[in-house]
Length: 360
Ligand SMILES: *Cc1c(COP(=O)(O)O)cnc(C)c1O
View 1 (cartoon, rainbow, N blue to C red):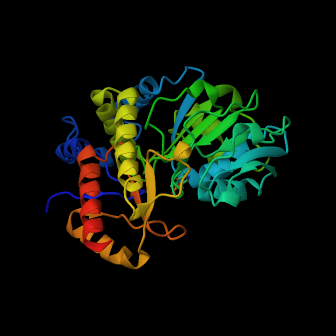
View 2 (tube, rainbow, N blue to C red):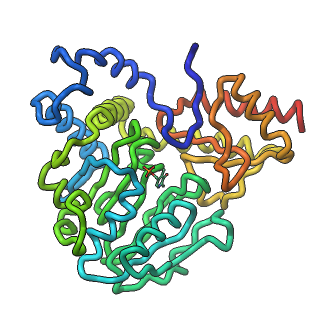
View 3 (spheres, rainbow, N blue to C red):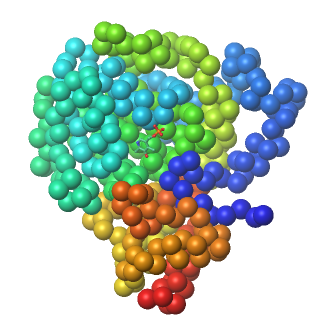
């Protein structure tokens, strides 16, 4: 069977070139006589893989030398706890911006550790917009400000970095990292689960400013301290070796395509096409404030929701899969990360037009 266009929010599509390379190297990596899966993480072969991937990521994102890159397990969800454990640093309150389902999860977890000030929330508008920076009530005593640059479920995205003064800015970039260049120096911590736009599930990337490492709240388990992993170059215990290796291949793939600037142009164009198709029809709609629409996750509804399952069935038959919207939002959602080829967007748009013609 040929490959489908998979619009899954995560785990999500990976570049075909990456998987072909991994397949070629599956049983014998670079003459080592073994798979990367079978390698000791302390072997010189694996360390060369780890070092190269870190170097490529650092170059690609222009990550300053004053930041550590950690390759961890536990998912973005573990970072919901690790962030307060590592960043409270003697303070007892943190600012959170509430723009959707993932913000809410981060907030609920932070409440286990500190007072949470919701400095801004778009819940009243059902998370279809982002409160303007001028309306945020940040607490100057906060240990950090946490926000979710792209809400994977609601399809709402910040297209600029909020200014928060000297308080460290923390971002859950799970579903937007590597979609465009970002000024890392504006952040205290950036974290992301890999399974959206980096690689396979199991790997979590944390980019943390060095001067924020080393002061955890009392009782923090060793594995939850950034210092543990920073000191050991992410080899304190066994890292998710194979996912890390595939992530490295993805970094190489992005570099070969021209880097993050080129990815941004492609992503903007891909998303623009799909929003135009939605906006130019009377049958499909997207509820998000056009200014804050996500480049990565595009929810849309049909004018006749009773046709949802027919839409999904026929889309699947046309090789367009996993378009069902999140249960909390309903309708459809097209997740179109870096690895979704532009041809996948074109095929989806053609299918949508045809479906509308036959069913509207
Ligand atoms: C998927 C996702 C998460 C959860 O990631 P896990 O790695 O499954 O813990 C958190 N935040 C955002 C923005 C996500 O998209």
